[in-house]
Image (cartoon, rainbow, N blue to C red; front, side, top):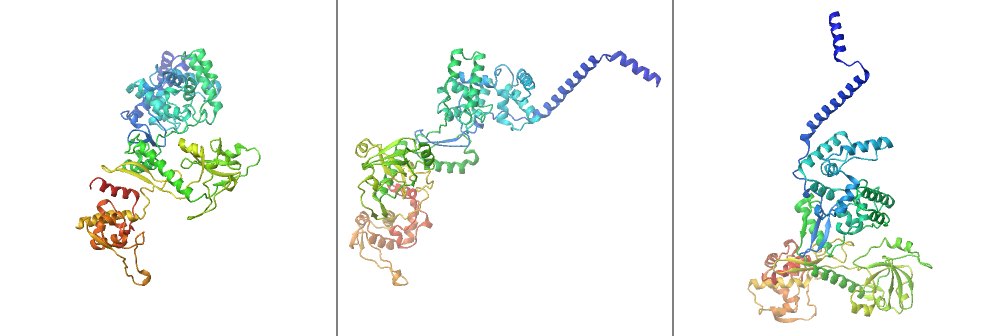
Length: 607
């Protein structure tokens, strides 16, 4: 034992340092080596679990579905994320420099992780006793945004670092920047800088000014805190800090810096404007795409081109709206949409608050009547302007009593309006009508609605479709969903069935009165013609031209109701919606406008 103890003492004196600083140095080295070994083991374990970069492309971006007319004009956009993918070559050089100054000044020099930046951020946070400065490179942000969860754990951070190295090995710097510029969240549902430029400034990337670029470059760090719409003071402070950094890095000169920091904040919410008004068509496309592609619909970046003709669609929308407004005017004015007290000088802030609960319906602009003169009225509109409503735009407004009865014609404006009335105004766009009526006409949101669909018979392509006065007032599509009795428009199909059965256009059928007996006298059916006249034997061509009900009923009885119904199925009518009795000849079936236009297209295209 003594020999062993003396051997150990001799070994420690010979091989181990005696001074404390040497022992501390060895301990630190051991800790460092152990840390390296531990990190190496963790990296070896986590590396095989890293996602492959094969799919790291634009197809992974959640790009909204866009719907277009046949000639490429935008109808609608559907998606949870607003994104406009761009190539990195389309991004202005100054915007790239703004982002580098804000997020990663060493981007072109590191290999995914900026160790100098990590040390600088750590020292800053230790000195300030905060965690305000991070050290994530653009590559690390791409790794986090594409593949990793936002949870703050050590394992996730290590995976982020490893994945950043992997991305740098497999992608070029330009490819990484392109992914970043398209993926990053910038507030208000805007993903990517092109979408943010549209949302905040209503511009494309190439139209942005230097202060606007710096403003957008400041958003990735804190999209809510530094948002120009919700926190303008923070946004300006962040923008100016980035401009100072750009100056220090030599990206801009002193003159550009001074001009940019003195530029007032110009950001505001910009809604995406659609070129063509076709919301009913867009909804039909959306429903079809969900059935066909399910969850990919809103994020797959689909560009759906319809058969809609832009000019035809605009004409259809305007024709339907004008027709319904004219119908409403013929039946009288039903009164204001609401009322608010107006005294003395109008409080515009209060009026704006009142009008925010009323929306534009079918281009009808809501407003509050401020003053009523003898033959005119002043109206404060929802867009903040004062509209002069002349007598020509008011005089039509006889009071609505019931469907067939109107009140007396108004003699002065006060017979129709009073101050505080909340009304709708129709803008007169036709120059000839403007000279006659003036710029505005009193209007009311129609109580009735309608639909219009136009088809190309040769191939069935829908050229124009509008399913109601205003989609946002009622999304019920009357073209495809409203089943109505077609009435006399069913007769061509009955007559066509008769021709197929052996009748000719010259065949004669009696138009004499008909009485169909029922179980009781009350159940007797006595069909009549509109003119209430009776005709003798009448050729089919004349009977169809004059839409004679009695001839149609006798003709249907002659060929058989079952045969006629079966024949009409060839035109697209649903068998269950065709009554199996003689009332079918008078149009008691149920069909949508779309079914009717499809059926008549068969005649137009030769069968």
